[in-house]
Length: 286
Image 1 (cartoon, helix red, strand yellow):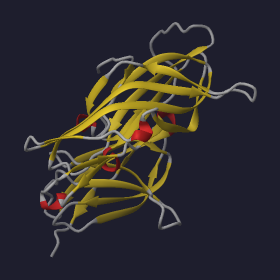
Image 2 (cartoon, rainbow, N blue to C red):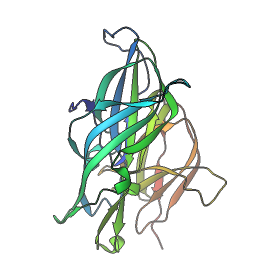
Image 3 (spheres, rainbow, N blue to C red):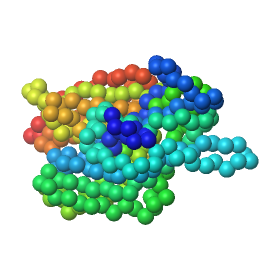
């Protein structure tokens, strides 16, 4: 892993936060301090047409909750330009973005400053994307539930950069024509000690593995207007996928690939610290 103040993991469809736990190695903390590691991961989109999705981050901050008489303030935990291709961090791959000692306490928000973004297609075409003006002060990311840093302990936090939501394709990309992308960064923050993972394979009815299949994880909601898509992954050349940093709970999943009927699996239970195996078998469209 590369180190740049904070360790950064790839931001395609997710950002990884490791579970809070005691360090297995001997670590000397300053009195009253704990350690926080921040990891970045990704989630995918029109993967067959895109070669790279590159973002540059030059600052990451975290906010500590204060008492009623003290205003909460942000603490800089990474301040050095870092360029990353989010597509290199798919299927459970992460890169450390930061590792820093923080005063014991409760932290409820992170702020990420993105300075540059571009998409490179498989044919070499490049699109330099406009950074939204609303993110000039930094993209605010809520930590839910809040991160509790304890003296002498290490906490791992995953930042899941959702590529499918963050890079919105313009044009008829299903027809192979892309006119560019709108960049609207969407990042979720996960405490890894409260999360599990889902992994498996996608194949067809002839037991042939299916690369580049979109595997989507949805939360069950009552309001049909609510966007319940939590995260997405694409299968690799072996038809395998992995979703990390999934909060404990019950979900449903879909596997989508052109020329095949969508497969839906309901009641997918995820337990913290455990892996759930979910395999899909897709039927060719008539």
